Image (cartoon, rainbow, N blue to C red; front, side, top):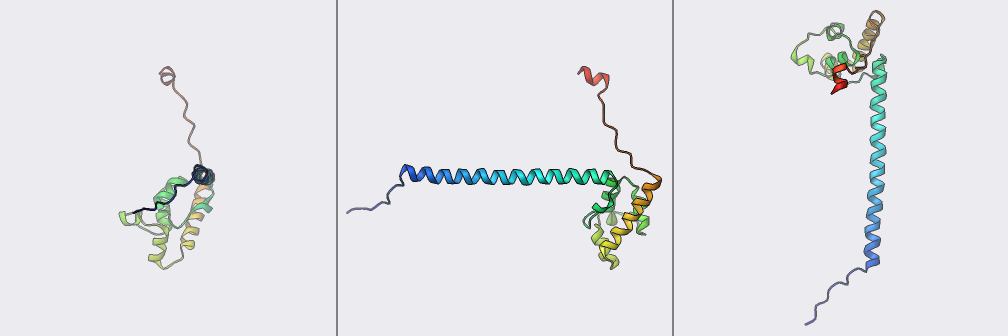
Length: 141
C-alpha cells in the first residue's frame, strides 16, 4: 500500500513566502509608526493650543472639571455659567449628557463655556507653569 504525501515546498518557495511576510510586517510597522507619530504631534498641538487659550478645542466628551483643569479656570465659574450644582453626578457628566438632560444642543453648552472662558481670560491672563530648574542639591546627586 502506497501513501501519497504532498510534496514539500522547495527552498526557493519557502524563501519567497517568508520574504513576503517579512516585507508585509515591515510595511505594517512603518504605517503604524507613522500613525503614532501623527497622533503624538496632534496631541502636542492641541495641548499648545489649549494652553494658549484656544477654546475651540472643547468637545462634547469633556467634563466640566476636565475643561476647568485644561483651561485653568475655576470649575465653580463653569458650573455657575451653566446654572449647575457641583455634585458627584454632575462632576462625571459629559457636556453631551448635560445637553441631553437639558434638551439642548451640546454646541449651545460648549458655546456658553467658550464665551465664559474667554471673558475670564480678559481679567485673568493665562500664565504657563514655570519650567522647573534643578536646585543646588539636585545638581550634586
